[in-house]
Image (cartoon, rainbow, N blue to C red):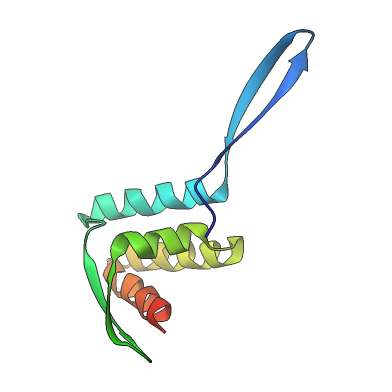
Length: 107
């Protein structure tokens, strides 16, 4: 998994280096998910039961699902965000989506 990183870039003007801070997609997605969970009143400590093929029932904290989505590639992040926006717009339960992702992780 990719770590949540902050990249530093900047310009060098003579002897002065002016840093510019930019964030990666990992940070943006993590911020979006944390904001969504906060708005829905969900805790990262919430445990999801997911059925695995080999080991049976797995207990996966919501924080692990958020880490997986935040470290996923751009296409997966975009798909996940679009699905969550649609669910939220129609006043659906976002936990159903997170359970779906947890089941994916368990297999």
